[in-house]
Length: 457
Image (cartoon, helix red, strand yellow):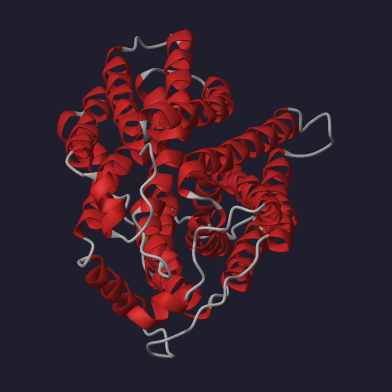
């Protein structure tokens, strides 16, 4: 964006008079509800139900050797879910920069947010029709939904600098995460009641899973109406090229632009490393619990619920800590806790649910806060008028590039045959991430991005 364009863009910091303050609060409340809407997909669909269910459908459709053949390509049925998630990452990486650049150049984030949200919600609702041997339909819907939620989060996150001033941004971001974890826990409880009591409802196990999947999509679509009614677009002078260009070219353009803000890029690198560790712990905790600790499915699902509930308190509590100690110090403290969690997990005895619940409690208390504060801290480092474009790079760090952690975890298990060695190998992400974050002079980074420097950051 040219200097002239930046000057004509609407300021990201709203005026302080009472009318504008009331309008800003209304937008903030609407903004929270998108987390409330879409988090049920991440919790009920991606974390709990779709992986095992899609795998069972693929196995039912497999040949005598255990392979299915999408597009004539032999794929082991047990690998289909992982491959579908990988493809969704590729799709998201291509589309996210396009959506971010289009939002910045037109100022019309809301229609793009609606398109992404309802594409994902429709795909998730369509999972109701997964039965029999429809593994291809399941893989396709998973790819669409997973890519759509990533694109929608680029646009959603890009609103943060526009609806919250520097001093309140940590609190606003933390409340958004809290709303998301609240809805995730609520819907997961309802779904688990239906799943565990399906016989009393006159349903088969497959029917109950399909209803749980579809209900997440309906919830996503219904509550998306709230932010779409309350958020407003900031129209900017378009400037530059009219065409967005290809996804890869736009991503490279964004990264080249970020080279003019090396401190912002340094934070993004630190976030990429430690968030990769966070995402891997979340995705592999159930495998570790079942395979290494011999815990049953009920224990694992209950632990997921515990994480969801405590993540609400954790997000709000760490938001308060950030007001006292600053976001950077609070995040660094949370990374120390993450490291201690992995060390404790390494020594957990098998067949001891109480200790696993204690570990889940610790994860819940730092999970929401570390994510919320990372988002709000990055929002201070984004140049005005390029919020969506920069947040597309941030979102790819959050979702699109979190593949190194699972690779390290898998290689550690492959080489040692021990899930304990695999889980402790993830400590490297938190140690390196902490070192990289500690080296970022955040106050100087905020000033270099042309933004007001908060008293505490």
